[in-house]
Image 1 (cartoon, rainbow, N blue to C red):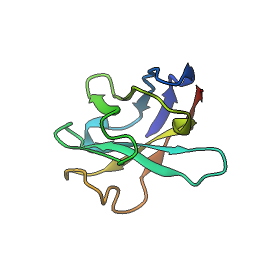
Image 2 (tube, rainbow, N blue to C red; image 1 turned 30 degrees about the vertical axis):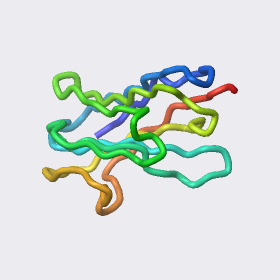
Image 3 (cartoon, rainbow, N blue to C red; image 1 turned 120 degrees about the horizontal axis):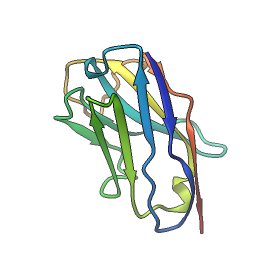
Image 4 (spheres, helix red, strand yellow; image 1 turned 90 degrees about the horizontal axis):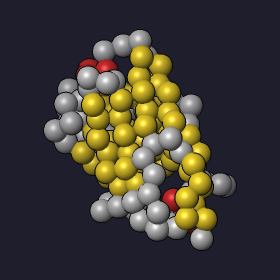
Length: 126
């Protein structure tokens, strides 16, 4: 499975962006999908995840209420709607896929993702 993330960019604090991640080469609907991010000088951290059918979602506390993860299995794409962006949201955002038929939770993923995308940069100016 190849994952291609795109849709990052430069936005002012308080603004919105919607990065996307397109998958190819596999059965997209077999994978739970997630977004991670890595800010300057920071370790990669979990942002959000969605189950393979979209029935369950989970968010990091830092983005809950501001970000929404969604997917379109017909388009093999997962999205991350980011609203009310803050300077601390600035990071490279990575999508990840893990084959799973379980709901997502705070323990997602239970082990390393099966696939990673290459990342898309989100810059938030204050």
